[in-house]
Length: 131
Image (cartoon, rainbow, N blue to C red; front, top):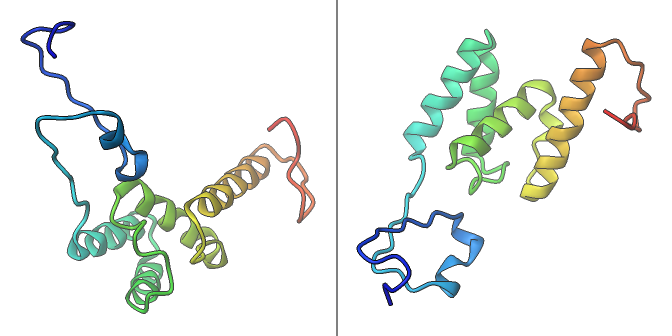
């Protein structure tokens, strides 16, 4: 009604699945579509070029083209970075599972990297507590 913030513009941002449209009645709705397939390819190639592993870019692009991975995730830059990090460390961590599964895999991967860096011995199937 404009009583609380007269003459103000309010911008609400959210993930598409956050349900903001159910709780608000915006005057304008803008959707950012994400990376095009060309952007995805450029990003992947650049990432692995920086990491000095260009052959992994080719492998990942092949897997993406065959639909072996969750393709709806890769059109957001932060998720594409997640996929690249996981692919680089262990291609088996990049599954066709859920976003939550990929976050869990990333957490496991990052904890293992940390433990290796600070020389903490970890069993293969259990992560240490307190990390």
